[in-house]
Amino acid sequence: MNNKILLKNIVLFLFPLLIPVFILGSFAIIITDKYMKESITNVNLNTLQQLEQQTNIVLNEMHLLHLDYNWNPEIILSLQNILDSNYLTLDQKRNLKYGRGTLRRKDIATNYIHSIYVYYRNDKGRVLTSSSGVQYIENMFDQDWFKEFNTNSTNDELWIETRKIAQYEFAKPDPVITIYKNVFKTNAPNAEGLIVLNINQDFFQNLISELNHYHSQSIFVIDENNNKLYGNAASDEININDLSLSNHQDTYEVTINNKNYIVNKFQSKDHNLRYFSVIEKNIIYFLPNQLRLLTIAFVVLSLILGAATIYYLSRKNARHVSDIIKILNTTNQNEKELIKNVSFKDNEYQLIVRRILKNYISKNNLEKELNNKEYQLQSAELLALQNQINPHFLSNTLAIIYWRAMALTGEPNKVTKMLETLTDILNFSLRIKNHTVTLKEEILHTKNYLKIIRIRFDQDFTINWDYCENDLEERVLKFILQPIIENCIIHGSSEEEITTDIKVKIKNKKENIRFTIIDNGKGISSKKLNSLLNELDKDQYRTNHIGLSNIKKRLSLLFGENFQFIIRSKETWGTIIIIEHPLEHSNNQEKNYS
Image 1 (cartoon, helix red, strand yellow):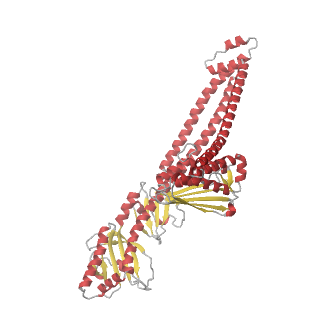
Image 2 (cartoon, rainbow, N blue to C red):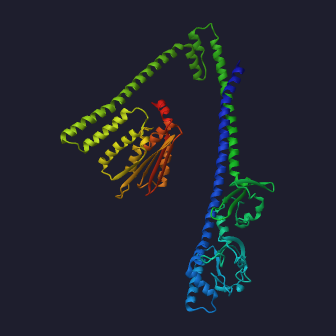
Image 3 (cartoon, helix red, strand yellow):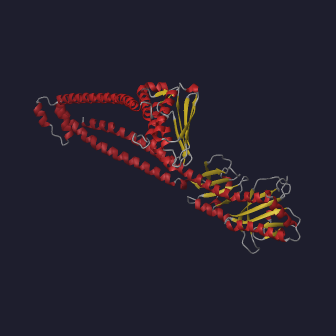
């Protein structure tokens, strides 16, 4: 008997423990693994986006040069005359000095620019350089760039290649990225010149080193012809052709030399460049793998400790139950003798046996509990009755104050207008018991409230209503407009004497109705807006934003997840609040909550 009870208790307690621990452990492993992988992917893509932004800044230098030397007639004519002239006039020397100085200043001020060449087709074979002014091409150590000039070309896009430039014959060549762009001299059909911008590759390598997050991570950039433009040292060990460049996914896996790699790719929108991050899977997922192993170890340890605890308690309980059964099976003892035999080390078992023997105690306790619940129910009904009486008492009192104020002045005044409007608002709250009202009733209630706001604050504001008369009988959530417009007036108004303009747009979208409230107030900073949204998402009723929180909770109670509650704001620009909820389901929901 004892062994059966022990086995039964172990089974009953162990399986309920195993199931939740197994489920929670599995979810923890899956969620942690997914979160870490998404986080790592986002970090890599963000790194590539930052690299793309810096590259666009560099490429923008070419667009600025192109604006001067392709579209500015004065610069074009002056430089063309200088390149064609046998002897330079005083004005041409000044213009040359200014033009070279402009390029030289850009070269010196921008650390990533190696050199700049501006070439217009001329019989002298001359070119304007940022380092030496006007030079003959045949005297330059760097002449490879001139091969890119084609008088029949109609290409108006820039193109890029990697080169090495030696300033002198004895000097070590500098690795550069050269950006080319044809010059058409405003309306020419074919290229009549070429702008060459040489960028130091060291700039991009240093930039990649700053953005690199993992050891042995390869980061590089290739052009539309799959030519590598620049990258870090680790990228030299990767064969670009092994990366499945035709794959259109942003993140995918490849196997190279029996090693799995994670590839993150980012396609530039402005230029035909692709940015890659390649890292071995075991390295990038080292932390998620460690967390997975720790989670598994924690689950196994929890199961072992839980099983050991359950075995100990089950064995102990089985022994107590066996003793209780022996006592109950004793039929030749009276009640007092049975009580004397109840002697367990654990008081709870002694209490169980005593209550079994004295069952009438439980009956008395049950009667007391029922009496206590009946008393609490009566108290709740009394409180509900008081809450029901108080609003009606307040409404009647407001009516008395209204007539007394009218009697004192003999004519309507601001006080009577406020009392009259406030009485209408209170009657609206008491008269309509449903959670939804017609759009006409909601608008009328909001306008009544605005009358009080105008008298109370003497504040200058305008309300522009935009809705269709055919939608006035549609049923909408009660008190959906007044709290939001009140926030626009009180919290959205600027400290400067600027009229607060509020636009309320109501649109019927067949199955849904959308409210859009826009104001031109001081707006909300991004930090405060995030704090506001987080506070509204919390499942609590105490909040500093009672009106907005109340609306959102009532929407959730009536429509579940089938609604929209959006807040957009920018400091000094104003705020937009968009609320959308169903129309056709509102009546059904109303029956459930009325």
